[in-house]
Amino acid sequence: MTGLGIKIKKILLLIGVCIILLFTACSYREDTTTESDTLTINFPTTTEAEMETTTEQTIRKYKEALSEDELSKTEELAKEYYKQHIIYELYSMEVAENDFEYYYDELIINYQAGNIIIFLTETSHSGYGSYRNIVLVRENKNSSWEVFTEGK
Image (cartoon, rainbow, N blue to C red; front, side, top):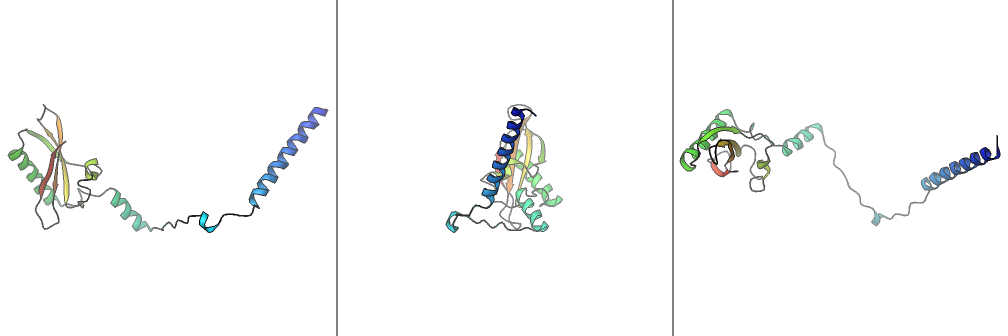
């Protein structure tokens, strides 16, 4: 082996020893943090049932919270609203999916599933293919449905 090869091996060995010493020194270093320097966060443990509830709260089940009869009645109420108050022809209407963004609008987020329903409509406003929303709400199961808003 040449003198240069031996020098390279010695340098690599020296670097390896330095790295080992560095890691050893870090792991045996005295902990100088005080209680006031740390913040303890206790994360609650959740059961599988609680996880399902959490998921349900994230995406509420608006459509499923109403019976077929209630959905039919709210749809008829929305259609009647279009006949009486909106001059546009109503081409189609369907229940909005549970993850529809308007359910999470700050004005209506406080209505619980079962007390709010949104229909997506297609009307003749501004020509064929104008898509609008109609939001129906009620205070509780014993109160009447009302049109909260209609439009885009």
